Length: 313
Image (cartoon, rainbow, N blue to C red; front, top):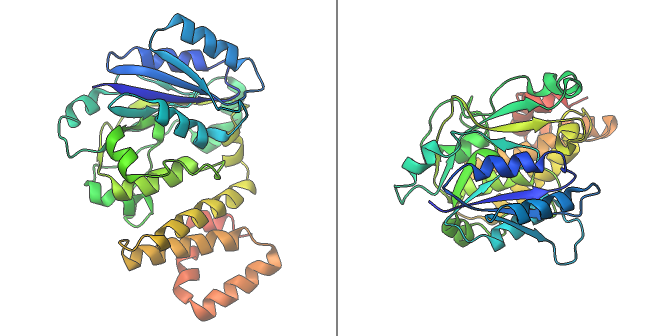
């Protein structure tokens, strides 16, 4: 295996060395690609030092050297990658020694396009643990049992009951089918949740197989300045970003003729539910009344969704 590990770097001078060295522990890692995204801290200099220290580390910036977000940075990393497989890692996260144990065996089967595994949680400080433990706890981010590849896409859409989740930190994917079937790879206009949109879309086109699900193969690093952690823990902002996410997923689903009608309806209703949840109080009641009259099942499916109910008022 020749794996290219892609690490977008933003405001992570204190963490990126650990991320890089956790990837370099594996002989299968052919290269570690750092994409520095105009960090406000000293991350660029740290990345330069890592490139000088390790032969397998390659550093890139966007052509204009401006900030473009994690999605655009991952796209640039994929463009520069030369390995047969792509793995992702956030700059404040890190791999565990078992990261590619399942992948080495599963990818012997040429029909396997991607392998996913479980993600654990590491709190970098007591303050971070106190602040964010209610959000993450010590739980694994994982899929609860092994599923056939055709069940992954509807499972991520919450159409398979208690399915679970996986993170791109735990995903390894063949580069060739990724480039052939998933374009663009990451939607750059989504500044948040572009990884979730990517997982949904790619799991429809590619065959995702379960790897190690009962223990972590990588760790999510949680600290006070983690941008996505701050958004996920905020009771107001998540609904705004979720509306944007599901709007994009719905737009894609409507443009893809092969997606079954029941799945398209489910996606549309999920999008509507988040739109209602993000509306002002007066507009909420108007939208609820509208869907009760014109599409009762749509609002009913939303009311059964705990995330929607939590964000309703």
